Length: 304
Image (cartoon, rainbow, N blue to C red):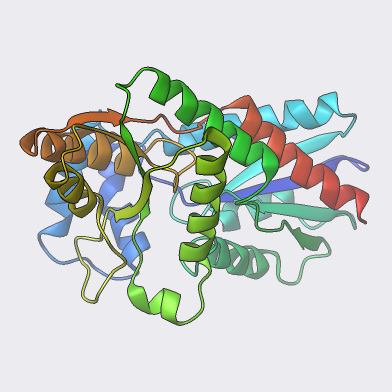
């Protein structure tokens, strides 16, 4: 139980399977239904290729530890918890661990930089359900896709990556695709992604850059957002570009969509098109990302 006077922070994230025996349950949780027969074998192959599991839950736990340390340096005594939508510890498990004693608020921060119904909206709904009937209040963090610290961290990583790539390498800012209907129903996801991409491009003075989508669900049964990374790469190759940098700006940490979709599938496609392929690293535990999270939590606390 968190001691009296200690701030309680909950980082809400997506989760991932940390071993192959967790893959089937994870995929079923994400889809919300029993997946088609071909989906699980394909997912197992992807996770087997990247080492047998996702590094995302471990990275999320380290981010929580680093955030607690950073808040401590700022004079804020905080217990930072992790709750995930599709992996353990789940949001419900973490709510039980936090408990219902005391009247302190729980500061909730989504680990998704762009709001949509399957990330931030779903996290917040799960948190409300998990804490329903408990005495603790809930404070939800604001959307942070244009937070200066986050943009600076992204710019730092991409600038370093471009410095190691050939002159003239064109940047493709990539994010997970979503069903088109979600955007039509009002999700700000695509607009927020465009805002962040433009902010990073302006910071680095990029004159040519592109936004594309990736990782369409193998069980997709409706139109999803495009253009795809593969389509953009093909267009660039046709126009005479010889080198591309895929920056998976839609993700703050490495997982199967970067380690397989980018590093295996996109690299192979680029090679087939005659393109030299480069990939910007995810932020993972970048101090700028942790600092941005601390800024948000500190700001929420000060506004109370």
